[in-house]
Image 1: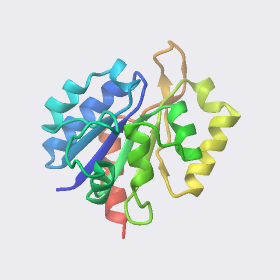
Image 2: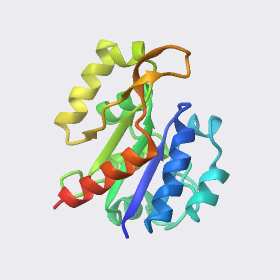
Image 3: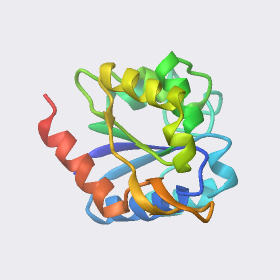
Length: 183
């Protein structure tokens, strides 16, 4: 059993993250979900609470687990964190060290030398190809994040291209491999 944090940011691919959380729980993992405000516009926190059996961390001001610095206590006791979908906006926040919401605060609180943090970018192909997005991805790789490459295929914007979030099974495999390779 692994203890996992799953961060959900704003993007239609959040529906896949719900399937992922169910898959992880079924394989015996303890999953805590954190969501941005934008993520909750796509899939509600009640869905993730039902699937994970745990409260959802939605903001840094509401106590979920530990009233004393809960972001620190959550970050200190996990085996890995995955942010899926990881929006263009969130990539920029992580690359610049912004920690003003539940997900970015948890990302900032994890020691990536000890605990893998995986990012699954998901966005329109044009957004993914933007120079700023590519700079942020390069910075995040240099900073020790594991970037899970987006897939190519049909996108919610009704176009074909690169930017699809990997399927839940592939994300679960990536988490397991990252944990196995961590110190």
